[in-house]
Amino acid sequence: MPAQVSPPAFALSGRPPHELTGVEVLALPFTVADDAPVLGAGAAEAAQATGLDLAGVLTSRRVKGTGGEVVVVPVGGPDLRLVLLVGLGEETVTDYRRAGAAVARASFDHESVATSIPAGGDAEALTAFVVGTMLGSFVFHWRSQGPEHEPVRRVVLAGLAGDDHASALERGLALGGAGWRSRMLATVPSNLKSPQWLAGQAEQIAGEHGLAVEVWDENKLSKQGFGGILGVGQGSATPPRLIRLDYTPAGGRKAARVVLVGKGITFDSGGLSIKPAESMTTMKRDMTGGAVVMAVLGALGALGCPLRVTGLVPAAENAVGGSSLRPGDVVTHYGGRTSEVLNTDAEGRLVLADAMAYALDKLEPAVLIDVATLTGAMKVALGQWTGGFFANRDALADALSGAAAAAGEPLWRLPLEPDYEDTLTSQIADANNSPGGPGAITAALFLQHFAGDVPWAHLDIASAGDAPNDSFEWTKGPSGFGPRALLTWLTGPDPLAGIVG
Image 1: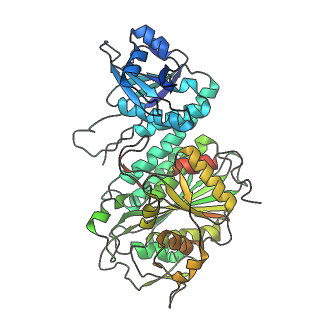
Image 2 (image 1 turned 90 degrees about the horizontal axis):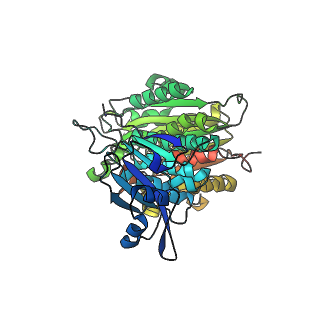
Image 3 (image 1 turned 120 degrees about the horizontal axis):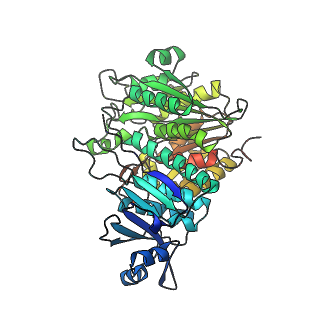
């Protein structure tokens, strides 16, 4: 079992950073104006208290002041070891998030850091800084001797006190924690991460956060006609599951319901339409959509979401075996629609379709959103730092893209172009699952048939499912991309305005 590494603990203090005792690292802000560095909140006082010419250091380094730029100043004191001078750029929310991530990376293997960086901003800046610090600290390991590096254990946010700051801190912890959980689930190797294991994680989240949980095993899936999930999972030694989590706000049993569906392919070999070996190396993260949904459900209570939210995760391993789904087979989805399987590596849409059909039949969603690392075509289109999405309502598209930009998980809308609809044609079934290019669009058109007339969005995050290197709050490897964007939308003011009713 991998050892769990925890994110830093955070505390607020009304005292300036240099007055805090037992701190190994001070992190102080700066900007650049008219080509000259300007010390930010608490930095000049810390310079005087420590006897360090921090302004001179910045001048000698010819800093640019961009968000997340770091100058490390070693200190030989018995407690204080480092001073970090961190750029705040134009002091946007993004700059504060990047500054937090920079502090996290520069503070690895230290016990404590005190910082006045967010003291110069508003509540949104404080939240963003906390999110960046948490996610920049992310570590996952399965090493016999412990992790190569450990995140700083304690972060004191200096010069900040009071209920307003406490609320902003709690929001940051919830958003950052959801990103951490999603990334952790996506990073767990598939020799542990079976559909049953994923269901166990959902049950743990439900217990921690007061959610209702239900899990369908292979027998219940068969009795209720979930042919897509069963078909994809039939070649694996670990049978599939359908996971359901339900969040109900206090006094909100009649509130509108949003349904989130997350692809839970715990490993994707491609099935009999097998992937090249090099393409399989990242496929432990093909359940990122499911991880996003589970992480979102776990954070809704802490963020005070006013809506009912149901999360559905169709979980299966797409394996190669004597009983694997064959090209040319036909599966019958929940509700009766049929799909001819021309490519067993286009399996994600088959499991999503079952869960979406169930949502329409049983849950009366006001809004339906599916999340999946679905198509390589999306990575070709958008690279690795931006997720793609489709929506059948402009108001929903605007709400999601705005929330995503604010959260630091940008999404780019692509068209549900009807001219490609005829590529879905099958001679023997309602549709085929591999209609060809443009691959991201035709996959979305396939799923649209399972959305009915409900406001619906399809998030194809295959583009952003892996971070190619450490960059700001992203750490190299499975990214867990998506929960911050969805949570920002779901917990914002009147999230269904203009979309429903």
